[in-house]
Amino acid sequence: MLMAARTVCQMLQRRLASSAAAACLSSAELCSHRSALFSKEQVRQRSLYPRTEKIEVTLQGPGLQGTLLVMNRGLSTPYSCTRHLTEWHVKSSALALVDGQPWHMHRPLTHSCDLTLLTFKDDDPQIANQAYWRSCAALLGHVLDRAFKDEFSVELLKLPEVPVTAGAFCCDLVLDSRLDSWTPTEENVRSLTRDALQLIHKDLPWEPLEVSATVALEIFSHSRCKQEEVEERAAQSQNGTVSLYRCGDHVTVSGGPLVARTGLCSQYEVTSVHKVGECEWGVLRRAQGLSLPLNLTVRTSDICTDCERKLIFTMGYSAI
Amino acid sequence: MTALTCRFIKLADGLLRGAPVTVCRAGAALQSRAPVIQCIRTHRTNTWWDEHLTEDNPWPRHEWVEGSRRVGLVAVKLGMMPVWTKSGERHVVTMLQVQDCHVVKHLSKEEYEGHTAALIVGGKNVSPFHRPEGYLEVFRNAGVPPKQKLTTFCVSDNAIIKPGTPLYAAHFRPGQYVDVTAKTIGKGFQGVMKRWGFKGQPASHGQTKTHRRPGSLGPGGDPAKVFKGKKMPGRMGNIYDTTHGLKVWRVNTKYNILYVNGSVPGHRNCLVKVRDSILPTRLENNKNPPFPTFFADGDEEIPEDLYDQDMFQFGEPMAE
Image (cartoon, rainbow over all chains, first blue to last red):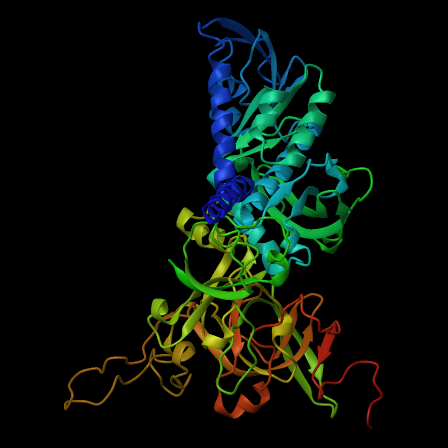
């Protein structure tokens, strides 16, 4: 009788322990797990083109009209096209337009097309600016994911699509319930800025991947709200795929293309972190930031003023 | 460079009683535990993920005690203007504006190889281009934009400030005495009358070709040499010089301007180093300053302009 009780006790302990271990993977392990699955999917997609087939890419744009490049299907990216041109093109192109559609610089080209390279100094930089804003928000998400100690869980929600004219980009997150009463001080916001600047200095490229909803759900298997976001985006997209972007170790979902690499941001500052309200996951917080790209720096002392520190736009952009 | 930090991790009651499994170690879920305050001394290395937001502020703010030395500022010399006292005397003041002053690095006593700890402070943002990589690295670790001038201040251990903290003009209050150090205006190669203040020789009454010469170089046959350090013509100026014991008449907190008595070495728009005076007769005026510095996120509200009590403000009734 005693033995049975003891074995039951041990089994309970082991089961509770295993569920404990699974429920609480440290954030570093979570990141590496997601990154490994991402790499696996990337390798699988690359293996869909076993034989090298050639495609013809016509370049459009000032000074480049009609230049024909012969590239490889499924392997060459707009970035490799720029490497055939000049170093200035490599450094300054932020985004590409393939047949008029925004296309990430590191995404492989699949068919013969017209390619336009976008920089921040074009006559109409609208698309590039929007992609830049989205990338800054993704970078903020990356920084916030890593900023907290392993025992506190951080859930990043869907990145709100904010127009550049709003004045700041933002990232919604829900922290562990133990941190409900924590308000970030100026020093905490400054250390977030410092982390972001270190990431920018590393100049990591954003690697895009179009995956089906099932693969995305598997990658984000530990995070309930990420899975919901994946399902929502898959429902909205035309062919049920979700675009994932990986920067370093951190995998994120995005609604539109991001810029080529983190090094394109130069002045980056996290302005504030506000509590917005309650949502189904817990206390919703919004982190805001301000940034300028490398070619368009401003010679002011402090790029954020008091008005940007205030919480801007509550309705309409929230993910909830 | 490593620094020792002290992290306070307080596991409060609310975390453990009845909360979902929050423990990452197998088998520990069934143990009961009382709230525990752990204090872990860790090595904070230069890797960017070590400083987590949930750690308590390891840079506590102490109170001012007799004999403690606090940090100074880097300011820009704007120009000079007159002030009047309540009794009608006219004095001149120099305006020093504190532009983007940040603490950039902290050197402990052992690192600084001195008897006190040191803080490196930078002033006035500049562009990161045209600067060597090693120079920019210091700023990247602190999370501040690169600065034009870096100075070191010896501080006592209770006055250390976290790197990245901004410093404002309200660090000094009217009635305090400061020392200002700056590089003097370069005069080039100058003669002995201008450089050392020699009297020279008369202009007329038979002087042959001798009007501004040094004259004798020392005693005659006994040493039969010119002593080392003899004042002679040479390059004058462009060296660091300190003016001691300058009274602060007024502090403008909106534009961060200090109004210090008298003149200050250096040309207009040059960067100067301002610190609390070390003159023994002025020590009572420097009691109870904002310690370790004036923090903008603190609770105290200070008016836009702070005047010294002896200073006449325009619009006041005058005592005839």
